Amino acid sequence: MSEDLVFLPIRDLAALIRSRQVSPVEVAEAFLDRLETLGPRYNAVVTITRDRALEQAKRAEYEIAAGEYRGLLHGVPYGAKDLLATSGGIPTTWGAAPYRDQVFDFDATVIRKLEEAGAVLAAKLAMVELAGGMGYKHADAAFTGPGVNPWNTGAWAGGSSSGSGSAVAAGLVPFAIGSETWGSILCPSAYCGLSGMRPTYGRVSRYGAMALSWTLDKLGPMGLTADDCGIVLEAIAGRDPNDPSTSERTFSYGGEAGGRRLKLAVFAGASENAQDAVRRNFDAALTELEAVADIEEVSLPDYPYAEMTSTILNGEASSIFDEFLAAGLSHELRGEGCKYNGFARTAVLAKDYLRALRLREVLGREIDALLAPYDAVAAPSVIRVADAVDKVWDRDEDEFGPDHTGAIGNGLGLPSISVPNGFDDQGLPTGIQFMDRAYHENSALAAANAFQSITAWHKQHPMVEVV
Amino acid sequence: MSEQLSPDEDHLFEIVRRRYCDGLDSDELEEVRKGVRDVLKQADALAAVKLDMSEEPSPLFRPHASDE
Image (cartoon, rainbow over all chains, first blue to last red):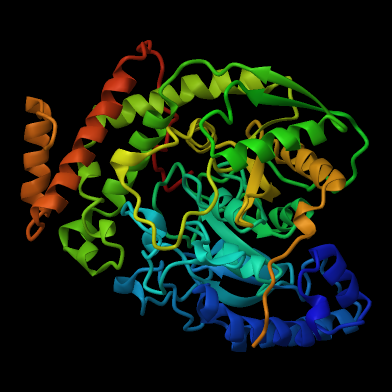
């Protein structure tokens, strides 16, 4: 192997594997070597699962040689955010020092489904401790250190799925699984120049995943292309008796095929609070999209979206981490703010939590009706580029204002995919997201695929030298 | 200098401080207090939206019956 296999979209890598031009073992060893040599540079990896990877790769090699090809992920390595339970003595640390020796005796449903698809688990990837649930103030909030951005090692990789972002961007794994409660897939995907998808809430089983918020947590794919995300999502989606929130609705990826002209919405003022480069690249992307889509501006009804989603998150997280906080374990976390920022949310009153849940139902209907005429709504994925890795965020100095699109999408459980749409003057990536109605992932994927069919941002990769 | 706390903020902060905040210095306590204030501001914003009594949260609870 060689470097030729790095940065190949899944379809291309799968074609080489299926035609036996490369063996799954060869592919696994190549990516395992990159994880070992380059992973520390980005603080991207918690555990390299070499033994399990090689065992799975050998099985894939045998099955494919026997004509038992399972599909596009057969023999393809991946990394999983380290909040997904893995059996076989592989630690699952949740990115937090108090859990660094935690071991489960079962695989999370997502891990199991990927194994059934023939994928090869190569690594457990770094993350902000407790998925950012304790309110981190700077990037150095994981026992593995701050997530470092492969595009600029002075910048943050984003969070909380930091290692999932940096590992895919640096070509350490072909794809990864991340999780999002509010921004944790889209943020590192945008910051690292990737394609990353937050599925509809309940589309992917959360069984075996660390809980931060029972009604906000989603698991989803991060890859090089929108097509990669669709392929992986099809493998991990589906009803799971172990997660009662999963939907009976099946998901079959619609593929890359385009041809139909799209109809996109843009929320009025969607980029007005964004950093200059983000706004500039978003506006340029909309101009490019006019080649494949009709675009209309729509006005958002005036509701407290961010307050609703924050109250739900605070109410659920305060219950989930009640014993953790009461035991004083937050003082063992690495991020300074993480030691005490989880305390205030215990002040959420039951009546206010329930009011947020009731409002969610009203807004769910209104936003669904608003989005119904469109294939997707386009918005900046994140309204800024990656901050410096040593920046401290001050709650009193938020220069960009509330994240309405993220609050709506996460609060209402809507799917969204972020794809790269350019760079700032320092060479840091920006992203555009396509969000859609619940269970309409294929529409969002169609918009993202269409954008990638007329642009080449997703084909650019950071200079990663193997020393 | 922090903002003047309302009585609700004051009381809720005191509960949080007493339950969890042993060993925090004054700057850290101020951060916790700001967090409590944010929680209450969010609640006020939610209360400003009129909701009919019939607007229910999505049900999470399913009665258990072992013979079902």
